[in-house]
Amino acid sequence: MCHVIVTCRSMLWTLLSIVVAFAELVAIMSADWLVGVQHPSQFNASAPGPPDPNPPTLGLYSRCIRVSQQKTIQCGPYAADFTEIASGFWQASIIFLVVGIFLLSIVGFLAVFSMCFQSIMGKSIFNVCGLLQGIA
Image 1 (tube, rainbow, N blue to C red):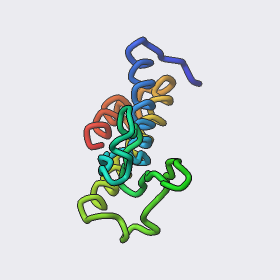
Image 2: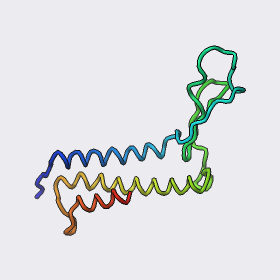
Image 3: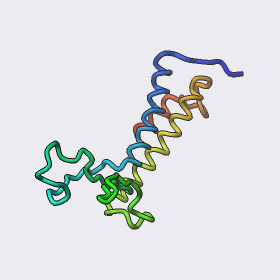
């Protein structure tokens, strides 16, 4: 039998755990890790107005560049497989972020069940999830 055990603190912790897992997923997919500047040769320096508001950007495995003929921004992956990622440090960061997302997803899943169950195999769900969040 499942008794619902909900407090404001546990509800807030559950929602924030899920939001943080999604935020980390968005961060790894984002192309805004490095934001470049436009070179003067890429736009007309004599034209009035501010410079281009859409500079080229680079993410862990994706990039956004301006297509000059179409005057549009084109975003997409620059690496077809894991070995084509920019450097070993970026490959390591992807590995750590994926492991973190996996652990935070487990925490989010367990946080929902912590509203019905207080322990797993004699251990408090809050302690187990806190340990996983600390590792992530």
